[in-house]
Image 1 (cartoon, rainbow, N blue to C red):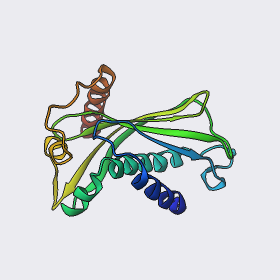
Image 2 (image 1 turned 180 degrees about the vertical axis):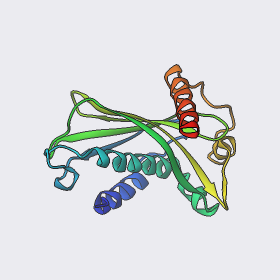
Image 3 (image 1 turned 180 degrees about the horizontal axis):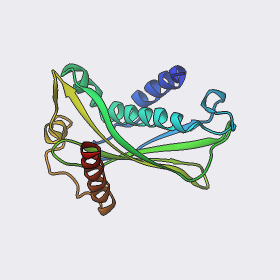
Image 4 (image 1 turned 60 degrees about the vertical axis):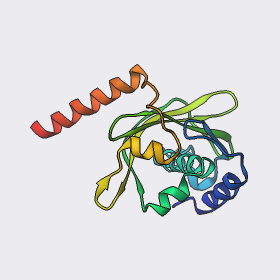
Length: 177
């Protein structure tokens, strides 16, 4: 089930929050609700990806880029995600979702999502995403400039470069297997 009410609350809160820049960290406070749980009574692994969608939405609203996306008829596409589950979240537990852009290459924007409680890092994920429109992918530099960032990408950390290589190896394996 899509977190409809959580999304509405997020949109209202994000519009009232201070404006951010493209490379700033988005931080959203949330709580675990019954519809987030699986049969083991902790947050369902798939729900984490849905929550991360909300982090990216918050980032676009607070950086005032969502309007640009709508006007240009761009739509986001997630290409891959690597998620590390470090600690379970349980019913009514409070947590913070932190989202930030790590950098980009010609095609993909690389982002980090961290889900933290007051005491622990519960989940960390690295994702790659892009925007599409009219049957084409929007080049990352065009995207960055539309969002007000006219410089180069931040240097991608070694672990992101390693992940990119792993993705290429995986793609090669899929083609030959």
